Amino acid sequence: MKNMKQYDVIVIGAGGGTKIISPAARLGLKVACVEKEKLGGTCLNRGCIPSKMLIHPADVAVHIQEAHKFDIHNDPKFSVDFKKLVTRISNEIDKDSAGIVDAYAKNPNIDFYHQEARFVSNKVVRVGDRELTADKIFIAVGARPQIPEIEGLNDAPYMTSTEALRNTKLPEKMIVIGASYIAVELGHAYGAFGTDVHFLVRSRLLRKEDREISDEFARIFSKRYNVHQGAIPKKVEYKDGEFTVHCDGLDTAISADALLVATGVVPNNDTLDLQNTDIAVDEKGFVKVNDRLETTVNGVFALGDCVGNYFFRHTVNFEGEYLFNRIFMTKSAEPIKYPPVPHAIFSHPQVAGVGKTEEELKAEGVDYVVGLNKYENSAMGMALLSDSGFVKILIDRKTRKILGAHIVGDEASDMIHMLIAFMTKNGTLDDLLNMIYIHPALPEIVRNAARRTDNA
Image (cartoon, rainbow, N blue to C red; front, side, top):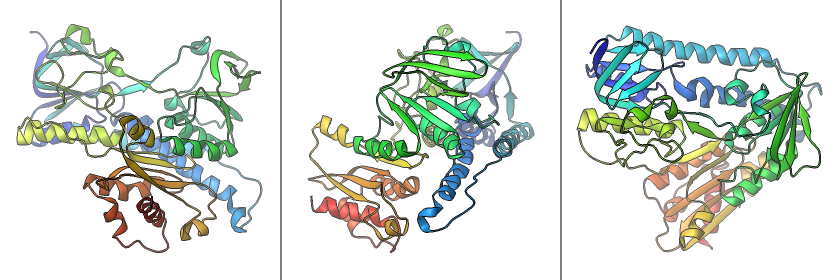
């Protein structure tokens, strides 16, 4: 066929797909990388990395603002060069992304197509005026922000996470539609720098977390930011630089000079013309895969957000490494086996979790015990003047295995790792109790929670 080019491997999407592109090329395979946006995917360009580069300075700002608790006083006039901060972050991100382009250009086994991919048939992909085919095709196109159907929203210049991470003007007031991790992370970042932030929350903040965790988070978070519980946006108006959002559940409309929409994500599979193939998707548009990440077409695989098993960069990395090893190295039919999958929310306070929530265990009828210890009931908690936060551990009553662990408070994203390690190695409550903890350090709160579990 005219303009048809044969490859060993085609990877559509250069976020999690990078776990296959370079490793396959190092084996001498000819690889086509197709990515319509910047290399590095959501994580590098508009997600994990730039958001944490913004959130860390925000946390520093919070520490400065709260220094008076420790009898440390600073100039009451707090300021931030927001434009310089965001510009620095954007430049660093763009530099890293460009570095991937340079690396691919130097690799004779990688052809980079900075274009959109569309399937012509099961194993043929059109890229511009070319058609590509390969024995192995990997779909890793990720997801994009979901935009709710709200009257007037599409006529207003609202921000999603993508724009919020590149915006160089700090708003005086911002409305956030959403209550999940993206909403509270970015809302916290802007709020810490001085924006008056208002969250419109339909049900509750972080509703997928363990209920005690989300309740504690909401209690602390609501002291710093405006949380409008039970607010259901119905109409958005924009005029002369001002957004006005009308909600069911609120007596009056809320106006602000910025609007952030963070209500979840939808897969990018609808851009691929999958209707021209036998690749099946579910009712929400996610690509259907089996336990080997195989689609319904032989030789076509899918991973990451576009599959919807998990929505973390650490899980798509795990999936990419699994696929590379299974298909190109061991050449086995071994199914993917996920170890305990953790997550963290980098807001203020931090939240982290792994394994089951208490609500899930109750629904499953599991016989379990709970160990919970507050930050303030620890030596380091005393040093931090903690008045909030806790570690919660869920233990199987009979086997004493760790079923779940959840933390809300300082350094939760680091503290959770000892529990991830124990769960990954099928650790028990006794393993937690029989180790020596550094005194005084925050992980002693984990030990204290374990002790309370043992006494339950």
